[in-house]
Length: 577
Image (tube, rainbow, N blue to C red):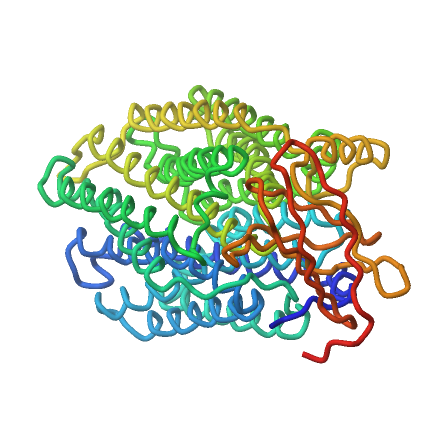
């Protein structure tokens, strides 16, 4: 059994760990947007039909969706750093497979392996939660969460430059090189997290979730090719519903589920995940619309006639602004909480898309839209992990953030399919070539505005958290903690050593009568901990920390809305395991 270490990782993590983890997120985003500049040329490059070429993008999307919650759970169980390295290593292998081929099937295999890199985002957020002091956690998670947009924004012009002046295979060599650099930096700088979840890996749950997601996302991404009312599309949606319902029932009965559905049903987690889908939709629309509008020839009457590279540079501020909002988010969230910053971000996105409806006639206007939307999406993305982390036990951070990242992926998948269908159905034929129309672009922006409005509604339903995972002003934090203590239904107290001194970063686990984990917490610097109980009954509180013997203490709770005070005194003998 793994024991928590002392607070040394927190000191090490305060320096170079955050940029190294954020760089891993940027590498993931680069992998995702790598082929955007050559999407229209893929059928010729791979000598295949356009409907087959889309599998090169679809395969990455599907494997990323499947890998994200699975890698999150494996990280909780066996070590987040270990799984982060594995995720990026699979991406490097996939990039090299793609770099050495110009045929469809090996390219799909390579792109599928690259999709596993998506697990790096929740794993990085989990590592930050486990190691960073609270005052640094808010801005660090914001940077990690927005890195996906930063990487995407920076990769577009660079990938366009490479695709325009070199062999397109060079894109994959570049991605593999970035992946290797990320692995080396992670090995040198990032310590392994001491936190581990109890239980085993839920293989059947992973298979069920994978099957359900593939059956759901496949018709979304391929529906416009197959026909939205075709038997294949409708049959897959129906099969997905059946599989996911059966999977949910299985997970609820499992002692160590892949995804704790009871946790995800909490309002704080549920409405954050629903809002995440809408943020994902709004993020992808601008990435699909602006590059096309900028590159269409001026002869169309509305196209802006820019080169591939210039179009990439004009959209790049979308990612750069997301990166710059991370420190702004940290200050806003420390003062007002992540719920307020999520709502503010959604409002800015709505303003960006609303203004965008009238700002499509000049290249500089695309730059303005990119900056405004980047600021809004950056604030919204930065708020999501803070809301999740504040609502789940420490041992479930990886899986919970994995599920949240998955919700964003579902949003981008739905966005890609719907906007693709809108642009195809509103296109006009010029010399046998389908060209998107201004009407199609405006409808796409309206859809994004509608998605943001729904996301805003979801955000308004979020309960106000008692305790955010970043530092508030001391008087405000004390007041918040007092309110939390009054409302807590569970146990609270301090973890002490044999001499009565507080023990920081001790892992306290709540075990129910059936021997199952009902909650977990890590003690603060003053040794304090608090654990909510799901219901009345008798529990065992198990505590352990590096340099101390383990302790198991029985306690009962009446189930009333009150906290039972219980200090836990650890024996003095050192633990060598």
